[in-house]
Length: 328
Image (cartoon, rainbow, N blue to C red; front, side, top):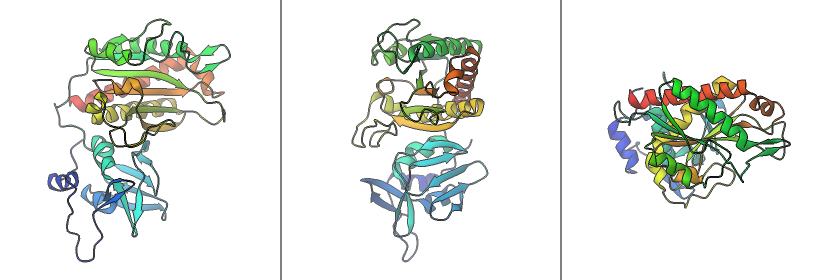
C-alpha cells in the first residue's frame, strides 16, 4: 500500500502549522479535551477521501479507492475498512466543524493507512507466545473451567501452526505455573523474539448472553487514555513498549481482522491499554482476548479443540499478514 500522505502537508500537521484556508475560514487546528485537534474536512481532503453522511450530524463515511473509514460524531468509535478501531480521543465539534485529534492522525491512522516503507521493518522470525494467567492465577472462571487452562491449550495449538508456517516459537510458560507479569515480556526479550503475543479469554459477570467476540489490545501511546474499562488517563507517560507504537497497532489490526473474518463471533475492535505485559515489551506486542468464556454459546466453542484450532489458524494468518506488510 503506497503512502497517501503528501509530505509537505504531513509536515504541517506534525508541526501544528496552520494552512491558509481563505478569508473567514475557521482555524485548521484547535485545542480540545486538553490535546491538539486537526480540522477533519482538511485532513480528509489531504488523504483524497470523499465525505458522505450516513446519518446526518451523527455518523459519516470517508472513502477512496483503498480505504473506507466510518466515524460517529462525539465518539471514539470508528471503523477502518469495516473493522472497529477505537480512537484515542473522540471526534469533536466546534463552530460547526468536526475535528480529529492530532494523536489519532499520528498514532491511529498513519500506521494503518501508510505503513512503513518497504524494507524498513525487522524480519519476523521468532514469536513469543504468552498463555495468560497460570498457577495461583486462574483468570476467568466457570464451574469446572479456568481461563489459564484454555490459554495454554490455545498456545500449544498456535505454536504448532506457527512452526508449520516457518516461524520459531517459544512460550512464557508450558505448564500450569505462575509467572510474574513483568517477567513475561522479559522472556521474549532474552530470546530475541520479534513479536510478543499474549493470549487470553474474556469473561463477564453480567449480561452473559450479550458479551461475545474478539478484541485485540496494543499499548496506549503516551498522552492518551486507554480504551479498556480500567484504563488510565491521558496524563500517563511513555513506556519501553511505546517505541513500537505503529507496529503494535498494525499487528493488532491484522490479527483482529483475521479473527473477525474467521470466527464471525463479533468484532469488539482494536483497543489500547497499558497492561503490564505490553508496557515492558521491547518488540511489537499485542494482547488477544479471543472470545468470551462466559457467553453460553461462544464459551462452549472455546472448550472444543476444533474451535481453538480455528482461532489459532486465524491468529497465524494475522501474523503472516503483518509480516508481509512490514517486509514487503
